[in-house]
Each structure stands twice: as structure tokens, then as C-alpha cells.
Length: 159
Ligand code: UDP
Ligand code: MG
Image (cartoon, rainbow, N blue to C red; front, side, top):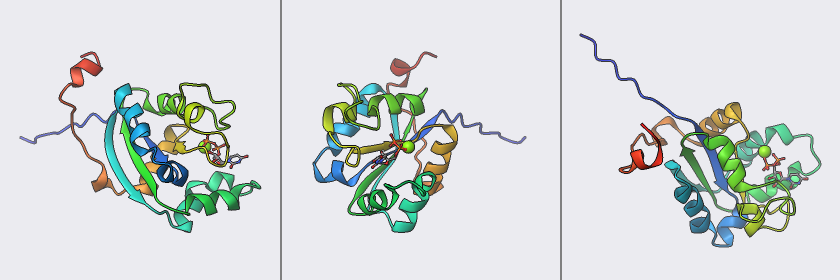
């Protein structure tokens, strides 16, 4: 008989701590917020993105006046790239991150608490399901994504 393994993959999103967040020593602070919320870390690595990677990642902004500066900035040093998993994680991560302009980001959010300038807003998070899939595939190989279950999983989600 054929054994069928059905892996339930819940929602995943791509999050990156930008070079300003790494340089300012905010990696632990930011990781902690996602951990404490209850999401599961399935991939994590530090890298200085190539220009090609940065341009593809921010491809939707290619025609915008800030594009060249944004690519210069994001390739200027190490970034901490992550994949987080959990119920509603895409929208929830955006809420944890806060508005793009730190002035509009509510206190309590990452940008609201830790940033003052739109061009140095510390963190990136995918803005929807398709973007999340695109960005995870862009930044990670399949074998870098860890399938595991938290020991306290049933304390995070019902049934
Ligand atoms: N950005 C910028 N100037 C602008 C708008 C955006 O430097 O006027 C940068 C900013 O770092 C932002 C990124 O471009 O995080 C991507 O912009 P987007 O509108 O996608 O914001 P996000 O999804 O990061 O909130
Ligand atoms: Mg965006």
C-alpha cells in the first residue's frame, strides 16, 4: 500500500531585518517580538544581498524615485532574512511591523518603537500571499525551510 504523507503547511511569510536594524543591534529585539507573538521560525540566515537579489525583491518599485537609493541601502550590509509560519502570519507580521512611514506606525509596532525615517525603517515583511510565496522562493532554497513542530504547539493553537 502506498503511504501518503500529507504535510499541512500553514501560512508563511518572508521577513527581513534591513541593514539599519542589524547595524543598530536590533536583531534580538525584533526576533523576540515574533517569537513572543507565537509564530514559528522556519528559516533564518544572514547575508549581504546582491544587487540582482535586491532589484528583484523590490521589483514592483523599479520606477519609483527612491528605488536606486533603496537598493543601495539594502545591499550596503548584512540583512537577517527569515521565514515565519503560523495562522494569519502574513497580515499579522505587517501589524507587528507597523506602517511604512515610522511617523504613521503606531507605538507598540516595530517601526513605531524603533524607527524614525522611512528610508531606515528597520524591517521588511511580505504584503500578501503571492508576495510571500515569491519572496520566500527568491531568498531561500527549499531545503533551508525547516518543517518542525513546537513542543508547546497545542498551547498556541486550538486542536
Ligand atoms: N521607501 C522609501 N521611500 C518611500 C517609500 C518607500 O525609502 O517614499 C522604502 C521603505 O524602506 C519601504 C520600502 O521602500 O519599506 C518598500 O516600500 P513599500 O511601500 O513596499 O513599504 P513596506 O511594504 O516596506 O511597508
Ligand atoms: Mg512592500
